[in-house]
Length: 243
Image (tube, rainbow, N blue to C red; front, side, top):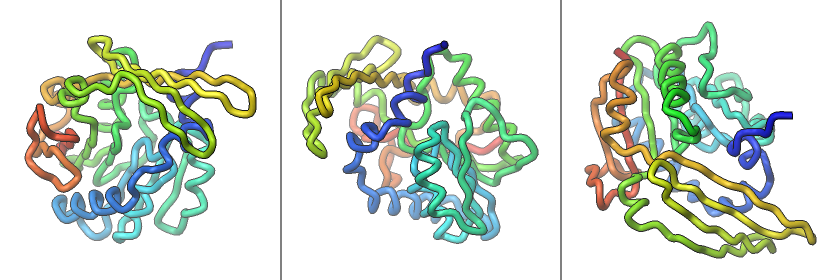
């Protein structure tokens, strides 16, 4: 039996959500609202939250009056998100490399470093192609990614986090193409080991990747939509429109 890709295995465990339980939901809400003010989408816009996790961004998008579909590869995350469904908000298990047939979105949001999980550039191209097929002409794409330049320069090699009675021992390595995070812990006498592998895609690499399908219109460096400064910014946020 073929081994699951790291993200399909790790993101679908309860331990992933324990490790990242301290995410700032208020910050995420402010970010979404700042984006919506900036984008000036039409009131009846249809939005896709691509790799939505448990749906926190989808819920905020929907609360601002938009029709939203949130999709993610993790069945457990989608099962959790479904409690928030309503007439204009729905969730589904889906692989971001595959377009959803028969739909057209006014905007696609890919947030909180939900890109670059793959080992090959070809799979990144599959994602971009899928997004382009699902976006209406001149529809908006928003990518919120780590600022790889700063992350590489400030890499925390070893770290220990104690959360919900579990001691997570974390080590990080930059391979030249990926940040690899090794996560080890023991729970109820059983040892666990998971790995995260995220490509270190910088701004110029995103430009090359997106250029065949999109026009990049703006680049920001924070959730407050501040100027992007490669060595200083915490985020790389790209706003593009479909060609």
